[in-house]
Length: 424
Image (cartoon, rainbow, N blue to C red):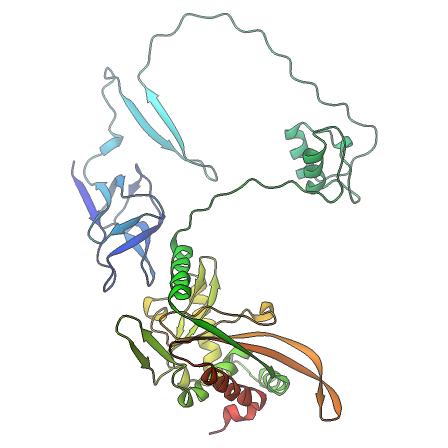
């Protein structure tokens, strides 16, 4: 038998260690060459590790959430013979730990021990009678099969449970168990508190926590909010969507990105990065726009490269493509790095105003909020208008308040006169 030590390879320039975010094998598993071993997360992306050999896994480096240094052993694989599956001689007493796994259950450890002499027969204990369940009430009880099964498992007589509606539901059963102790008292509208649940902060959630903490710790934030009348822009958007043919449907975001890119040349300090250690601010000519995207793994920021060169239709396609790649975990490293400015939008959940946290080392982040309809004065007349607040958070070491306000006012002019977005 031979043992192969799989060492964590160099998975990125300047990367010294990576975090284990998922194991795809257990000790004792037989794997084939190119089988997936683990998912490792660096500062930039999640990388899948594949086994270069076939064999049986005999050792793993750590638990999910542990850090592993580049070059350290990630897994040990037995590559020859039957390994731990070889049967021991019948006359050799052994103990063997076997991991038995049932879908949907936690790991169970079973220990097999060499047979021992059978003990002398013992007198069988007297059977204990099962406790009697409360007698069912005579009234008819309406409840779903799931509620009935749960009540049966708990030994609860549904005839004692008060229903808020036309039938007994889980909430009614919860309230009965919590407040009555089985004595029939029901507190209307009450529900049982859940047990405390400790959740380990790992993977993407830990990276987000570290980056946000570093951003707030090192960057003196300030936020400026302005209201914009998007009535004309929304009308234009509706007309373009009605005649889009096979092109993607337009949201507000592509128009906002066009406005951002058109105003950046006049306000280059917004599209920049600040090197804390070197004390250097780099003002970028191209706009590589980060797009904050919520995924099951947490917040990710895919980057639209050279956004200034794209029209609204091209931007809509790229937004859709990158968002899907981020949500499915297929975004490439180069699609998640190199941003110079970020936009974050919560869509219809956008609220009245936001104070977004800067995606360091960038120096600004822009957040459109939800669109609402309200009456506004137009001279002596009152008209219905669609209004949207737009927030910008800036690094006060690089961007002054006057500059941020002036930039947003330039955005406002384009947004409220949308024909200018398409003018040369």
